[in-house]
Image 1 (cartoon, rainbow, N blue to C red):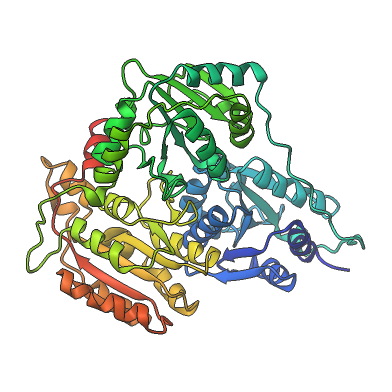
Image 2 (cartoon, helix red, strand yellow):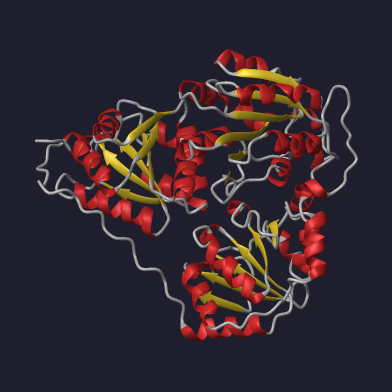
Length: 543
C-alpha cells in the first residue's frame, strides 16, 4: 500500500498543481520524490526563502497554485520571510512543511509550526491522520486556490510514513467558487457616480488582473483614465489613456491627473498608502469608490464613499450594459499631455553620470531601448526600485512581478527565477540593488543551473541606499560598504558579467542578446547617488 506522502503527491497532481519548489531535507525527501513521481515539476533552490519566493512569483505569473516543499523546523523558519510576503500578497501558495512526529517532544527540530504560520499571516493546516490525509490535502488546496491564501500544510513524519489505501478513482479537482455577483443597488449607485463624473479615474489592483479588457471597455464608455497599483503594472499597456502606476512611481503628469479626478474607482485595489501616496493623490472633493470580491477589503485602508462587494469583471460588465457613453476625462488636452509627458522616460532630467558612475535614470532608459519588448521584469526592494519600475516598460500584467508587500530586500533574484519559469517565452530581467543582490546571491547558482537566459542588473551604490539617504543625521557607517566586485562573484557562479560605469559599457547587452543566451548576463552598474529617491522621500516622511 502507498504511504501518506505518496498519496499526497498523487492528489496534488490530480488537483492541478504542476510546479513545486524547495530545498530537500530528511523530513521532506519522500514527499518531494512523490511530487516528482506524479509529474509535478520540481525546482531545487539553494535556500528555503528563495524557493518560497520563486513559487510565489510562479503562482502570480501563471494564476495557478504553486507548491513549496520544506524540511521540518529550520526549513520552515528559513522560509518565513517568503511566506510572509506571499501571505500579505494573497498569493495562492501551498507550503508543504514536514513536521516532527507527535511523540518527538525533545526533537531539536520541534517548533510550533502552526503558530509560526499564523504569526506571519499564513493559514495553518495539517494532515491529521492517515485516514483524513486526502480530505486534509484537498481542503488545504481549496483554501489556497479559492481564498487566495498562502497555506502551510504541516505533514508530521509519522503520518507521512503511514500506509493507507488509495481510492482507485482519481481525485476530481473541485470547481472554483462562482464569482461574487454585485448587488444591483450597489451597481446602480456606482453607475450614478460615473454618470455624474466629469473626470473619472480607474485604478486597478491585483484583483483586477484578469479583467483588463472589461475595464478598458467600461473606461472608454465612461471617459475614465486608467491607472494601476504597482502589482498590476502593465495591465493597460499601450492604451493612450493609461497613466501607468499610481502612487510613488507615478510620473508628475500622472500624479497631477489622478489628483484632479472628481471620482476615483479602485477595482480590486486596496487603495493603500503606497498606491495613493498616503492619500495625497485624492483631491479634497474627490469621491472614492471601491469594488472588490473580498468584503473585508472595502474601506480597509481608507474611508470610501461607496463600497461594492462584487467580482471586478462581473461589476464592470453590469455597469457597461446600462451605461451611456460620455467623454469624461478623455479630452484632447489630456491626450496631448499624456502623449508628451505621461511616461517617466518623456520627462527631461539632468544626467548626473560621471566617468566612474552612471545616472540610474540614464541606465534605465538605455536598457529600455536595448531590450526586446517581450520581457518579464522582477524588481527587488530598495532606494533604487523606482527606476526600473518607472523606466522599463512591460508588455502586460504578466510582464512585471513585484514581491514587495512585506518590503523585504533580497527577494528580487528568486522572484525573477519564478517569473522566468512561468513565462519562458519572455526575456527575464532581474533589477536588484547591491544590498538585495548580495542578500539573495545563493540563487545565482540556481539561475545558471537551470540555464535561464536572464539579464540581471545591479543598481550598485555600495550601500543600503534608503537608510543612507533618508536618515542623513545618523552616522552612515552602519549602512555603507566597500565597493564590491559583484561581477566577479557572478562569474564565479557561471554567469557572464560586466561592470557598467557609462552608457558605452552597455554594448555587451546587444551582443549577449544576439548570441545563444545559454548563460545569464549580470551587469554590476555603479550608479550615482540620487540624494534620496522621490518615492521613498514621501514614504519615509510618514514612518
